[in-house]
Length: 287
Image 1 (tube, rainbow, N blue to C red):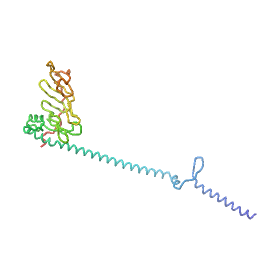
Image 2: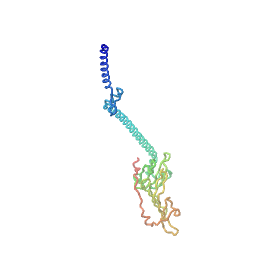
Image 3: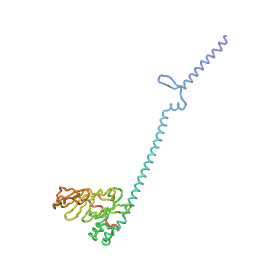
Image 4: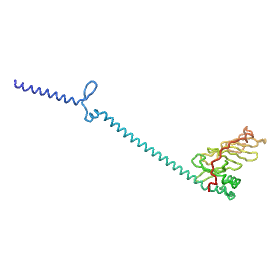
């Protein structure tokens, strides 16, 4: 009995000792849980490493953010370059189109350049605008230096018009393009004068007889193919033979299609709505 007791006691002591060692070893594999002091088993080794090194977590996150930002910046830069290239291509296309449209007037410029130098040779030419012929005759040898042309989009539709007239102001003819070819829109002459007012508008001063004088504002249609009336005043004799001033918005010289105004003849003659001369290129510079 004593011998058995002697044997059991060391074993018990050994078991107790091993239990303490195992408990101590297990304590190293626990991690803090809640704030109440409870503990929960730790996760994997990688979790323990990430949890134990918050600086590494922040570094990895920052690297990812930088990479994403750089990628987005590169994409934005590429898009900006692409947009700029498209704009440049559109500008080039517009410039080429304008050059093509202006070159469509090349034959007309050459025609009038020859006409103003020798108007008598073009008297029977149907292509010649009457106002240009009249003015060239009146200016004689000075016609080439005092007359010119201007190619500009006057109506605002993207298609340039060509104006021919005197450098001092009066416009003798305005053309536009139809199917790439010049067509006459309107013309002016000594007793039917047009002065450019800007923004596609023209001041008109005209005479239809001893008792009929007109003064109005006209403008090009949106497509540049017509000259439309904004306002028109003219004088005419009434049923009693008195000279009156009439008004309309059609450009008509018919008193029955117009309204009689209270304007005096003196005020009518004092009207001054003239604009500024166009920046014409003298025909003398075309050869």
